[in-house]
Length: 70
Image (tube, rainbow, N blue to C red; front, side, top):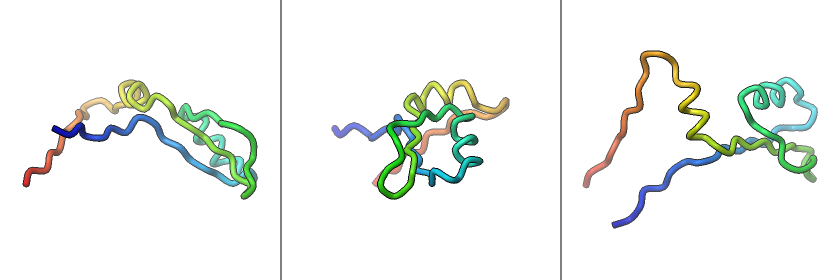
């Protein structure tokens, strides 16, 4: 039986001059990894997506699992 893939991390690449977007992502818990790349982008990573989701679920919402059956 195959394991279903799980999303564990999110990554965003944002132009180094887009200070407002970088600030937004950092306020959500993303951390910058490395320096500005060749294309003028910074890489921001949210490593522990599960912990973030557990802390930031709006009241009244719950996780619904969708399974596709053949």
